[in-house]
Length: 413
Length: 208
Image (cartoon, rainbow over all chains, first blue to last red):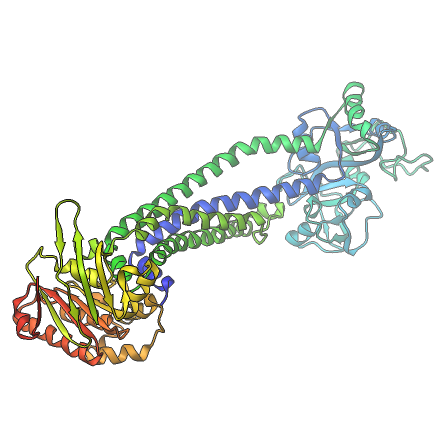
């Protein structure tokens, strides 16, 4: 026999009340946990994916779209930019490195990115097996892509125009998989990488007049090594730029916007803007969960306060049996804390479970690389916070228990 | 041995009670007889350390209750006394066994399962050890309350109107039970009551 046995027997005696109190708190904590997991992982993903990219240069349009399309690969391109213009920019003295991206096609809604090996280096992507592409129409697939599409070395597939499965099929030019990448936990996992000229080749069929030339290239392009420099007939989607020095951050965007037909977008700035837009929704949900927690605290307080009246004889008789005032105080506190501890543990478990169900049931969410089994220190704070909540909402009932007047209660006064 | 001297208690305004000096020897049985409002519950609570005396002294087994600190008094109550009230005041959410285990736990004594079996045996309700309180009849519940009072082998058992709500047959049974259990556990028994029927059982009388 101890105080916990007593407290649990009290809680069990009113199962519905106890369940309601625990569930109310659990719901509030679960919503906070889900937001926490989402927000944290989203921020981590964004910072991982924008690492090493100071500026994105593309066709004029929405800067947010430019970032979403060229960094996160979840939106459509704004248009194309001229290869010659892009090369000139890549050689600019303020540019340390420039990576070309040629987008537009996909396979089973996984995007095919025409680029060069620097793009893979940017995300420290390494081959799990196979080799990098060495000729046109050879591709290396990201880890998630390979897993979900069951692609392996030697497989072939036909790409489709756009990002959907129903896009126009380029069935004359099948791609060959030459390698599979290791998991990087970045956007590369969900991509199919190839060289830029593969993308040109697939699209060349549209205007069939053009023939692939076999002439010897004397001066190769800095962006597309297999192609000659200064070709103004070719286009790419964008350039990912890294600054040479801090001055570039001030001068380069202004220069590009003013003196070229292209526009720039900063991943850091656009990501912050995106978060401020999402922030309204997150704040509303957080507010709602705090209301739930407040109601649960009130509900626990009322339950304890009411049951104390029913238990005044229990309390008095326990004092007559030698229980100190402090023991009754602790017993009442223990009841409140037991409820909030159970509630918060259930809530934390529920939060992770909902995210687990989401990531395993919704196929699209697997692409985001969200995990339900990541734990953050804030969850410990949530737990400690609910402990404190239990102490606070059982404070007044505990003081009442402490003040129980044995004589008056037992004499029936 | 219980000894009181010039004990008085004041209720809020004019209402005040002066008690005669008492001397109750070990292993005896006493009846505090008086009408309602005569102060017998107050006296019983004063003797049991449930109520702090405002004037006078109460000496129990060599300790002056009026001089003990609150925590000393709590411990004294838990180890020296067993209380029985008109209503059984058992904790409804616990089983018989747990209700009884509460006595040593709250008094800070060792929890001994054998002692529970022994006491339940003495009171003839050994088969009710794992029953819930609401499954018991009124008589069985009162026996559990008595078992709880004697479990810690207290020196003194204080009973407040244990028989007044009972018919003659049950009154006889409960009073016999109390006397037997008090003797078995070598405890002094003090019963506060207005029930004249008990006069035939207990001869030591204190009329209030």
